[in-house]
Image (tube, rainbow, N blue to C red):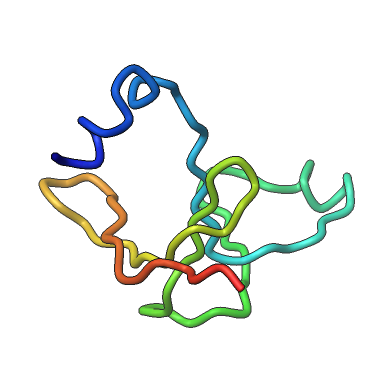
Length: 82
């Protein structure tokens, strides 16, 4: 039996998935100064994993990839609960 079959009706419940590359704190002035094409410096480098959260819980790591002109996330590893 697959995981979806095991969950039955629960498999249709929507969950919010959040992909976090990095976090920054901005002032209101910083945000108001942003324009299309503005660049935001981040501490992570290109090619590093991003963190994936579901319902605020860290569940996996992924990497940003481009497929058919769309930005996607490829899962690379699951976060082990401690």
